[in-house]
Length: 111
Length: 113
Image 1 (cartoon, rainbow over the protein chains, first blue to last red):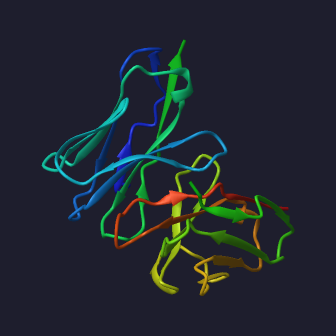
Image 2 (spheres, rainbow over the protein chains, first blue to last red):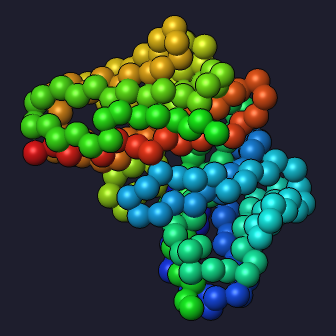
Image 3 (cartoon, helix red, strand yellow):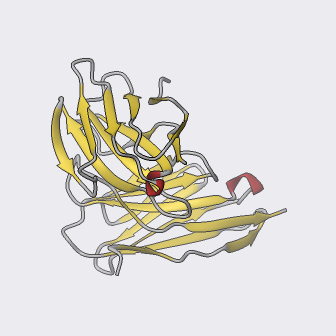
């Protein structure tokens, strides 16, 4: 079992809707959680990171962390076709150390 | 803003050859990470350096070696290449003392024939 789990999708949402992406992780005193967006053949692009329980908002994106339930989610409001990509959840169990990625969720936004 | 630079962007090698990948981190970033991403897979951590010293090691084959130089750029050396080494190789950098955020370079696509 992978230490970071994501539903591979694809998740299809209509343009303008809210896309909800989820990620669960193994409890190892996890410290920081990251969401990356990756277009096919391109490098992962950091969307945001979160390390405290609760919500963190940045523009159309909101990350939610629930350490008791060991899950982190990413909400994308007003989804656009350009948001169609693979979204990677990553966990950093020790400050300054490697990222462990989930397998990624494919998001398709239909216009 | 300046980003991570990787070279070359594409590399084609034959089996048993050697390849060298280069990474130039974001200015003032002190930590460099190398990741390998095979087709349809998530990035897998290989190795990292903090202040020119190896800080962590992942699933890096013994055929691979890496180092970070005094100007903080890093090189990944890959010898006795195998077909299975064909992948995207990403370098990421961070400023460890300030933030855990890792920023990825554009990657090097290595094809072994």
